[in-house]
Image 1 (tube, rainbow, N blue to C red):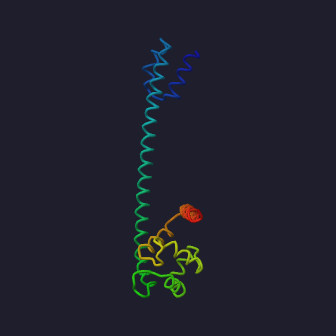
Image 2 (cartoon, rainbow, N blue to C red; image 1 turned 45 degrees about the vertical axis):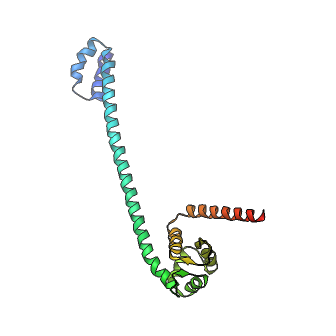
Image 3 (spheres, rainbow, N blue to C red; image 1 turned 30 degrees about the vertical axis):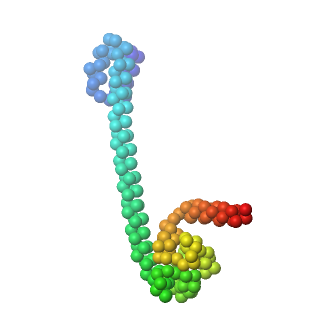
Length: 185
């Protein structure tokens, strides 16, 4: 009969388990039990799939966290390496040994130090742009920059994404505009 054929299909194709031999007589006697057993089967199957999916998602999250932590450790190592070579670079530029840099010292270092010129070339800063860079490094506007100002600027310039640099430039331009507006008023 069609009823037996449908039941056999469900038993073999969908359920594929021997528990169907227990429920077959019940379903044949009372057809509405099929809804009960199929409902139970789907609930168990969906629960099992959700359990497997939650394990997969949990492992993916753990992997992402490990990758993030590894990236942060890598960034810290790069920063420490940069700070290690920025100190000697600063000392090479600081010819008078004052612990600060002036525009003359930094321009002279650009002319004589190929390593500094290489770093600035990578940052797309030429000799003319070096004065503008010096003014931006000079946080307090006193015409000299200390090691902290120099190191912060060089580190930020090398570590930041171009989008972050553009946002910083936009904020600096807004600050300049506000300053000019205040002086004009």
